[in-house]
Image 1: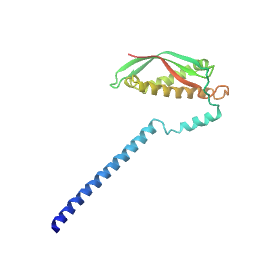
Image 2: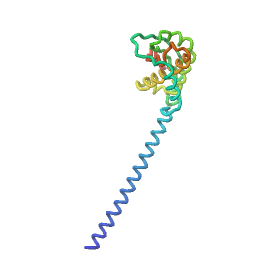
Image 3: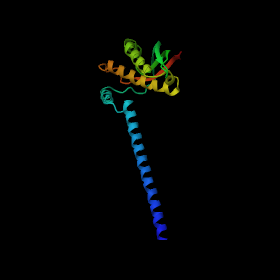
Image 4: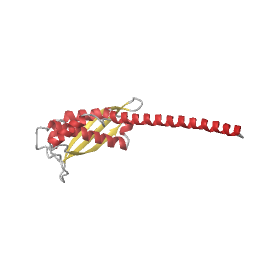
Amino acid sequence: MAEEENAEETKSSGGGKGMIIVLIALVVILLLAVAGGAYFLYSQGMFSPKDAGVNQEMVKKEEAGDSKETFKANIDDLVLNITNAKGKEKLMKLSFAVKSVEPTIAAIIEEYRAEVIDVVINQISARSSEELLTVGGKALLKEELLEEINSIINEVTSNNEDVKANNIKQILFTTFVIK
């Protein structure tokens, strides 16, 4: 009888060691997942120091409020080179309008058209055609273009107190063709 109890204790203590190894493996996997997630957020610019400068600039300028009156400026007929996931080149035709609370937005966009187009080219070049064809890809592109174009407008109008910061409220795609 005593030998059977000793045999059972030996078997159960071996199972406990296996359980500890599984728990340690799970903890290591969890730590790797958290580290990977943090790296992804960092690489996407969530923790970038440039955000601090933008926040300070916004304190200097009055934030553009929600106004009932909006104004539009168009960027028409951009033809861009993009690639798909396999590296094959494609062409894209893009036109869009920016919707703003600033009455002079059309003149500002026209004057700094080269800077705006450069931002668009950089954002499009960073994506594949498959990503741009999805609804989520288009929404992400709109968000990033909105942020980047507002940044340009804020920078070039920083010494003009009449132009409010972050006055562009929406990007509207009017032509979006990938061939």
